[in-house]
Length: 428
Image (cartoon, rainbow, N blue to C red; front, side, top):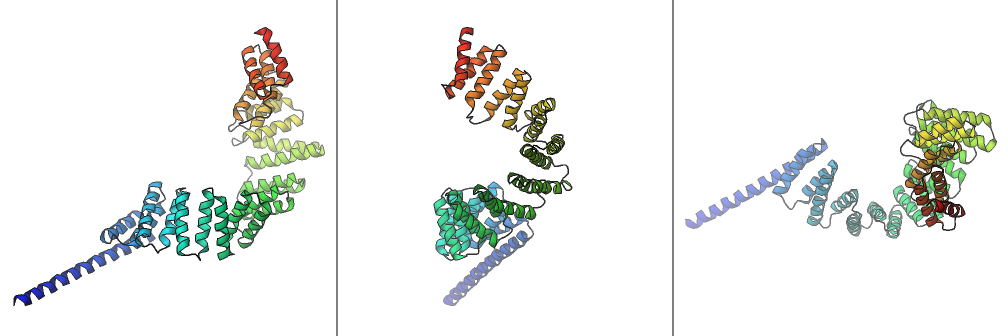
């Protein structure tokens, strides 16, 4: 009798345990399902709560950690990205043969700019699946961002071997080859990228820049034309194309490119700046006063905009100077020196114009500001001599001495500075 009761008790205990396990499993699955549903509706807080509940029930569930990590990553705040990385690391540890947690860990590490950790994660994924071109491409990209260009080249090449039609890998190969000063090979890689993906704008931008560097004018213009067609809403595309036509001395094409955009962007000062620059260059190159008049009209219209840049105002001043209108030139150049960020050339040009009108103090201040603005100046000795000479005219021997000394440090044999030094010694 006792034995029978013991058997019954054991059976009941086993049944209870089985029921508890089954109930726990049902609750776990319900939490995962609830989390998935919340995630589909972009209810990230509810999804995290549900997945956390699933993890509490099954701490060894790789899928629950993976899904919660993906939810954290979707929120994209830095703290959430850190939490996502922790969950992906745990998921990868729970299932060492799964590639998805490693790929996600690599992706979030890349977002956090921890390229060494991204490389580590992608490299582990590549070892698990050496037939995935995507993993090799991501490994190449992380290596490139981490500064290991040679390793990036190798991984990009492997990605292309696995999937010759992966346009992004050809693009990455191109920028790596360009960085390694192999421009011809880089051009071929980038050409392959745009052939495979004609709308891959970053590859076309890189290719256009490379063609310009290689002095392949026709190819450079062709890429800029395609970019302006692909990205028609961006004024910068049309400006770049117009200025490239101007560099090639295709004046009519340059003007047509920009004037065709004025109907859509009639208040954009960058169009007037580029158009004015082209007409100004054409006027100088062909001694054409009609083009000079057009240049002044375009540049001064652009200069009247509150969005006019220092460079635009400087060009307007230069056009006025070319037209012999010194008063307008000085006013425009003065405005250019007051518009931030200041174009360094505007300070030089204003200093020269102010000097011509014997306004030595503003001329001196502009040139001193120029020296403070530029990182290095190959003409430091010349500029120092001008500042010193103007300072002497203003009876400011201390400033003159300071700039003579600075100029002589740059060029101890500058004759003008040595002459000014001899002139200043009696004053001292």
